[in-house]
Image (tube, rainbow, N blue to C red; front, side, top):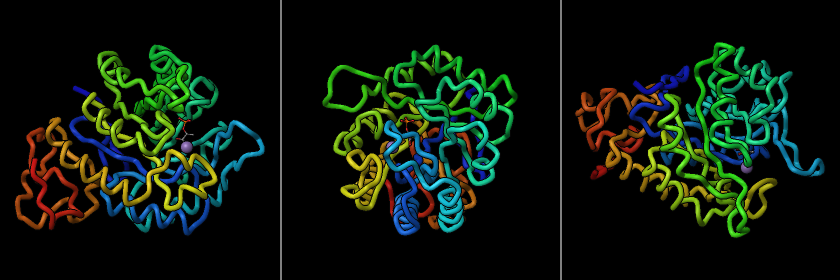
Length: 303
Ligand code: PEP
Ligand code: MN
C-alpha cells in the first residue's frame, strides 16, 4: 500500500491521484501572486506554489519578501481554495512558515541541511523535499529519513534535475529517478520540470513524461509576465500555456490509471453536475470523465 499525504483541506497526494502545484517562483507582489493564483486555480491546479524565502545563488539577487510574502500566500490561498507550498530555508523560520503554509518545501540547496530536516520533522505539516543537484537517490532517501525519524511521516519527494554537462538545459531532469524511487520507498514522488529544464518551452514535454514515468504530481512555475520576473522567468509558463498543459494532462491522467487531484472542499468536485458522483470514489483507477476536476464539470473530457 503506497503512502498518501493528505492535506488539511482533504487534498490527497500520492496513491492514485495526480496533483499539480503551480505558481510563481517567488512571491513578488500582490498583483502578480493573485493573477497567477487565480489562473492556476481556474486551470485545475491542486496547490499554489511560491517562494517568500528564496535561496539565490547571488546575495545581491532578490531574496524574497519574507513574512509579508507568506501573508500574501495565505490570502491567495483563501481566495482560491488552493493550499500553499512554500520554501523554508532557516530552521528558525520553521514555525513561522508552518503557520502560513500547508506544505513546507525544503529546497535542493538544503537537502542535506540536517538541522533543517530535523526541525521540519518535528512539526506536523507535510514536507516537500527536493533532490539536491548533486545528490544521489540514496542520499535523497536518507535525507527523507531525517524527517521521518523525527516523527513526521508526511514527506513528498521531488526530482528537480541534477547537474549535467550540457548547457542546453539548466539541469538534467532525471526521470528514471521516479521508477527507481518507486521501488525503494512508499513516499509520494513528484517532478519539477521547470527547474529541471530551465526553459518554459521544454516544460510541457517533460511534465507529460513525468506522468508517464509514474510521478504522483508536478511542481510548475507560472508567471504572468516572465520577461520581467524577478526570478527564473525563462522557465516560467504563461498562464495560458499552463492552462493548455493542464488540459492535456487532465486528458492523459486517467490513461495512466490516475485521477486528477483536487481538494474535496471544491463543491463541484464532490458533486459533478453530470450526476455521476459515485464514480468520484477514492481508489477508482478506471479512466473516467469524472477524473477531471469539478471546476470543469461543464466540459466532457474523453479518456
Ligand atoms: C523552487 O522550487 O523555488 C526552488 C528554488 O527550487 P530548487 O530548490 O529545486 O532549486
Ligand atoms: Mn524557481
